[in-house]
Amino acid sequence: MKLALKLAAAVLVALVLGAGSALLTLRSGMTGDKIASGPWETDLTIGSAEANPYTRARVAVAGLLALNRSETIYFTAARDGEGERLRTDCTYRVTGTNPPTRWWSITLYGEDHYLVANPQNRFSYGGETVLRNEDGSFVITVGPEEADGNWLPTGQGHTGDTFTLTLRLYNPDESAARDPSGIALPQIAKEACAS
Image (spheres, rainbow, N blue to C red):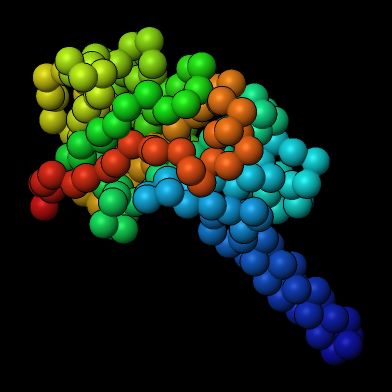
């Protein structure tokens, strides 16, 4: 009887440790062929046969419908330009110009990897919908308080809730698909926080 209890305890500990480490790995971010450009990161194996099982699982958990890199490059930002986590109670300015791609979009996701509910039902801006300055550049305000122009609401989250921004580049230029690290990506600057 003692041996059976010890064996059952060992199996239970192994299951808890195994499941816990798998969850930690899935939520810890990308581990494959990762590149970063400012606050934006991408894993070059997403959407390819070279993706390891952990990358495939992260893609499934995050809900990406990953296409091949020659079709789409996915960049994600969980931090601002200073390296601080993006928080729902802060306001940010995302500034940039058209990346070298046929079409692009920037979408805001909550901690749960889902779109953030908001009364405006506004979840993203793209090359066709973003308002531009005279020089072709754009500014997107991301934050809890409504702003003029391009505004992505962070919803009614709790102080300290975090979010991510996903930049999708559909049909990138050949040079961008070959070397995504050379793409000039939008800057993310924190302006103010409520707390």
